[in-house]
Image (cartoon, rainbow, N blue to C red; front, side, top):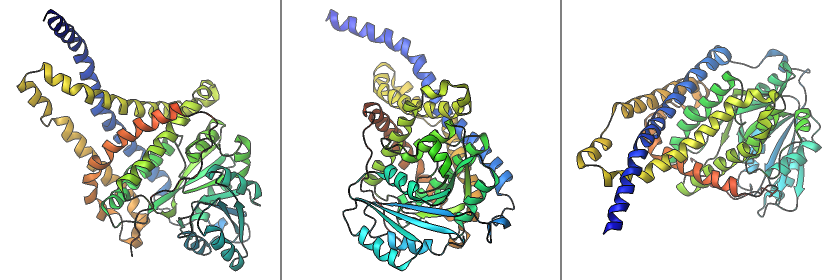
Length: 436
């Protein structure tokens, strides 16, 4: 009996010490996303006013004989159902001077057969076959070394590239020799389910807005793996893509910017992609993204001590705080049952009641979605705009915030446990359902 009394006393002393710390953690959990939402909104508005306002067509000098040649790289793994449509759409590019290099990376379906059939039909298509699954990074590296052009446009095997996308991206390389990469604007193709519709709003309100804001503030966390263009000499300067990073797009973005190259965002370079529409598929995708981000934070930490890398300090700090935020939420949730044991019923009910901070977060969330959809709606005028998906965004916090916290924790742990040098290879992903 004495032991339990002493244990209770120790617990009460600990909770007296822990309570103010937990209160600070709770305030950080609430105010951090609130603060970042306004940072992203203001940055996106600045980008819109500077680069998108009244801009409707590519520069005139990109039409005619003065266009630099472009190589479009398409790494493929089991893309038999998609690659024929992808290459067919590519042939409709308005850009006058381009070649296509399709890389079959050890596919186990009929991807290689289809690529050979397409190569016989299109003179500008070359096929590279890797007999075993080497990973997307190796496929891109191989194609880049074989490419004839200085400018490389990389898309996925299921992506549909807008006819004027190449022209929009090329102009950045022509205007500024320090531009090492240009990230495009992916749009969601499959919108027949709740998850698909929510992702339409997410890519606008979260992905698109963050890219605009980061570009306004100087550095971009990552190019879009599904649609990005690169300067070949910049890739050669940094050693191309890393074969042991699970997200080659995040890794190459940091390598380029740490080496002094600039990354730009071109919202007019549209690319229609398939996304997961099951919780299991979405979970695997987001864990992979989280792991890739954490791998980059771990690998390039020492590089940040160089004065030349000072431009990446704010971006690194923001990413590190985001990971910390997820773990603090987990820590806070773990202590909630313990707080119930040491608090009165009235205190517990008060803690669970709505507060002004919750209302402010909700209003800010809707405001963020509204601003981003207003900016992004011009790029989907032919599909009825994205404003009609505003209603579905009320489900975003429920579906994604909890999942993002969980995937960040799981992905970070995997990144810490992963052995350096372990090859990252292709995996089968959920491509969702197509609208008929």
